[in-house]
Length: 364
Image 1 (cartoon, rainbow, N blue to C red):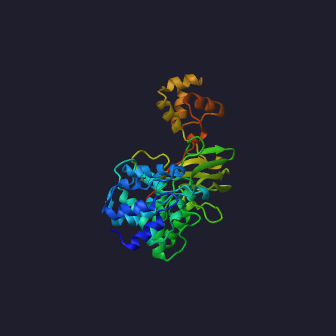
Image 2: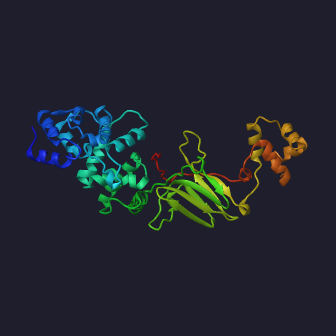
Image 3: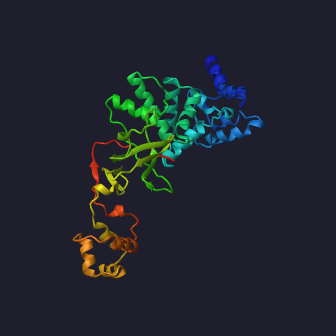
């Protein structure tokens, strides 16, 4: 049986526009354990069949396992939520489940974690259903970012502890870091992503461009201490885009740029700032690249010397750092050794950072 209060709740959150509510109520009156067949007893009208596919996966164990009636009724607002496409909404339980599926790398699934977060948002934090299903999509532009969904849940818990208000801030990653900072928690540093044709960074004219998900303040200015890019003496630092952004760094002769963990070896546990660009006024020639690229290409010193039409002894001095090749010979060496950038010859040391807290969310 179900109580009058439960029936009222069911009729409130199972939309008559898409489902046969009476059938759902009748089913729940007769069953103490609810299986996936519940979604088949409330067929959609023919004109609404497109939405049925958004529930069919739940029947196959994708995001739904048989549960007791009390728990099922509590979760009805999530199970039977249908995005209003007319209002440009596209989020629903399926997108959250799919995001969780990807977040766990398609391994063992514990959907209870998802429902516990949904229930806390809805019943504890009093977030409305549309925001629950849509907020992280509006933030990221993606329907399956479960990592950001979890970040939002943690943000709301922190808001509660600090008696702060905004449940759906304009920039979640900025507002969350701001709360962490003021509460004495080390803010998250967001690692750069890829830019251009899947490059770690690229140069355009007199700029270095870095891609990623970067926290910016209300004026759109990047908060560099919360970003895995360290910059000295830039002409400017601009940030464009919404959630996925491009950081554009104007170069000067004294600019230095480091990126966090960009060249770490697999399994590397230390956080390391790797230098990616030094301006002309702060460069010191480093001949290490000659030996590194020669050995990588399988050349002997004599083969390289012959290719650039110089003596082995002269080349050995270049490789050891006893002398530096002139511009013409440097171009020839870069050609034979397949070196793309003069930045490879600039002496620059990485910096190990043991204090920083790095983000561990996954992205699309």
